[in-house]
Image 1: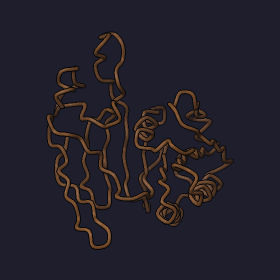
Image 2 (image 1 turned 60 degrees about the horizontal axis):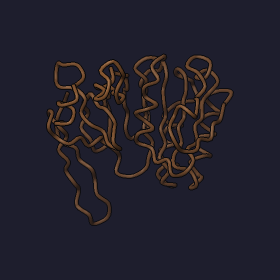
Image 3 (image 1 turned 90 degrees about the horizontal axis):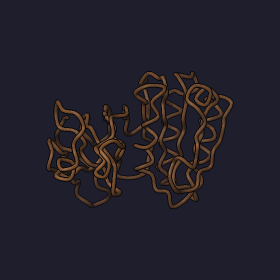
Length: 231
C-alpha cells in the first residue's frame, strides 16, 4: 500500500481540499475520485478477469439508466454483459461492430442527461482509440456532467485524455462472517497510476455497506472479520 496526500481542486472561490489517503489499517478509506464527472480509464489485470466490473459499478449512480457499450472483440473474447448479475438499476446495452463505432456510441450517450453514466468496453489497442478520441470523451462527460468509464481489455496504457487511470485485478474475497467456507464481499487490487489532483498509489480494497474499505495490510493476505471491521 502507498499512502500520501490527495489534492482535490475546488471550484470558483472555494479553497482546495486536502484529503489524507490511508497509510495503514484503522483509517477510513476514501476512494480517490475526480471532483466532478469526467472520463476515467480502467485496465483489467487480465483479459479473463472481470473483477473490474464490480469495482466500477460500486462507484456508479444507478438511479438512472447506465449505457454500456461493448465492441465486437470485447464480446467475443470476454463475454457479453449479463444484467441480472450486475445488481439493481437499468442498463442499456449497445454492441458495436468495432472500436470506432463504440467510441461514437459512447460520445452520443454522453450528450444525454437522462443517463447515470456511460461505460465503454474495448479490446486491445485499436487505431481509433487515440488521444483525440479520449479527449473528446472527457470533454463530453465534463460538459454534460455524465461520468464515463473506458474499460481496456488486453490493452497497453498509451497516451490518453482520461483524468484518472486505474489497473484493477481481482483479489480473494474478504472473510464471510456467517460461513467460513463461503465467499464474502469482493475485493480488488486497485492501482491508480495516473490522476489529475491525486497521488498515485496501490491498495487492496473491498466494497460493502455502500463504501470502500481497506481489505489488506502491507505484505499480508485479505483480512479476517475482526480486522476488517477495525479497518
